[in-house]
Length: 120
Image (cartoon, rainbow, N blue to C red; front, side):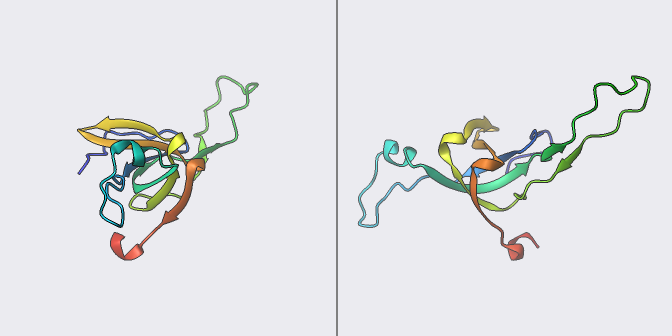
């Protein structure tokens, strides 16, 4: 498993461990890698999520000596452990600790499947 303690996801991004593509058809024919890499959607499990969408930008004409307020966020719908179906064209592939992962904006996620029984 991936150690996510040192990973910080920014904004509305989601880190996903994608499932490997279908390498075999239902009739038993093996597909070359180029076939399943061209699929428009892919599924995978959410590893880590960003804080969300920031609410309200700091006011530029605020007094510089006043204490700065922490930024508030609208949280994302995705949670760690969810199964996500996302658009491949919006995914950015990264490799962390010899694991292929993708970073996807929440807007590219089409569906989330959450099984509460698996998380408890």
